[in-house]
Length: 65
Image: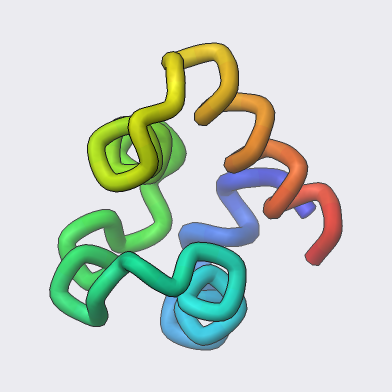
């Protein structure tokens, strides 16, 4: 699934994102609202990942949906 599809179904996908990244709050996920770049930044911030690591992780998440 690409990020345009994820963004369109974000309310449904939010639970799956919460399972993958348990440290993210509902407020964090609401703020991201399915936007790829914001999700990457949030994963970087909360988990201390580099931008490249966060991009890979976020893209893997979308591809597995």
